[in-house]
Length: 90
Figure 1: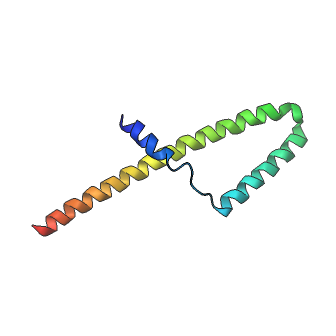
Figure 2: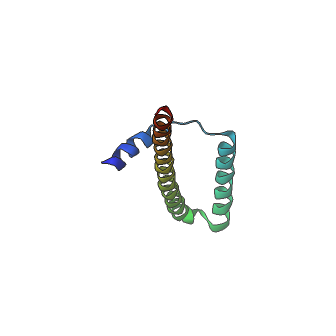
């Protein structure tokens, strides 16, 4: 249940804007893929797509795990600051 809530929160970040650096790297990757296909042949395109799809899946998993870890840290910091404030008031 907790993981599903975090997954829904994570989905709200999917529409984020990407940096120029990210966009440049995407263009560079596309060029590298084109050059690779020229070297190995069009018949290997499907294989390359399967490999890159797997890389994207792995990246999605890491992104979600990073989000969960960051969320957990933020909650702990928030709780810690609340208790610190309470301790300071007593």
